[in-house]
Length: 410
Image 1 (spheres, rainbow, N blue to C red):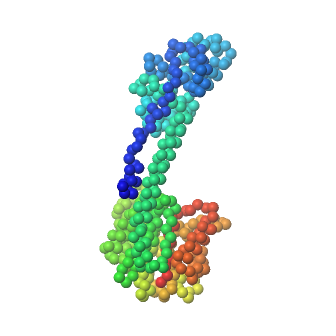
Image 2 (cartoon, helix red, strand yellow):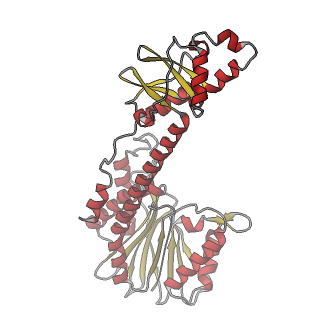
Image 3 (tube, rainbow, N blue to C red):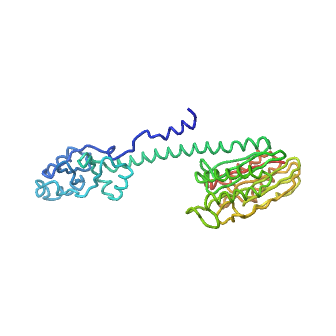
């Protein structure tokens, strides 16, 4: 059996949906002809009995709560006055009555509608209208907790397998990067099990292409957006080739807007305003020629003899969003890099992470300082140092976003 087949088999129904029948307890019941002395006797014999149903001609008509009944009968002269009277004297005439086939979700809704008394008194369960037994609030809460735990396990299983799929889709890019630039290094850490960041690499005859992108959201919604964006980028590369990063961003922008109905400033799907920030670049190792097009991401460049880190800032326009014009044109930035130059690009999960003594963002200035400190290290060593610095900076704060950054030396 393949891994996918084995995974899918976990979602075949194994158990029927729990219902009220699973909570049904057979307990003694009273009839209207029986008196309160009999009720007192039954409660004395069954000390764990919370409520006592009253049944007439096989059908339930009420429920006697133990605490209320004993409280009333303990008052002065109550036994003398009510002992011989019908048990309906202290009966709740409007208890919750449900059919045994009612599923737990619907039963929970009804219980909430009936209020607190149902949780304390319990409810009557019937089968085809006839009395079958009772259920209690504690049983119901346990059943709901078990169902929720089961659903959570199933959801987590599906998300974990989605992570396998997402990583598989990125594997070919890592292999292309290893072939084109063996010394390059990439960090990809989703905030959740799956993430909204992705990367893409491909090679040409005289160079290689790379993208680092941050899609809207994180977790499952973000992962869906990475599939849309990476598929659009693949199609753009197939049609236009990898040497013009700006035209590729334009193609992806139009593709996302059309796919999600985010055209002409109108939100085609209620609540939909999704897209990505990305840096795309083409690099030719023989000449040191780097062509960059970026949507709201910064590319950091450190030349061998430079005293500071140069920043190639992206244009302040996201890809695919409602407010991004359909025909918006990103511009290529071209730089010539001497051998030994360091190039670094990151999504905002690194730059915007809150931390430090004042709870502020890590920021671009600290990134530049760290790159200068580590300038003689390998890309892998530099990324490791950045990760260590990030975790130290983050401290007790929660991770805000997915994390992706890429470093290579020319």
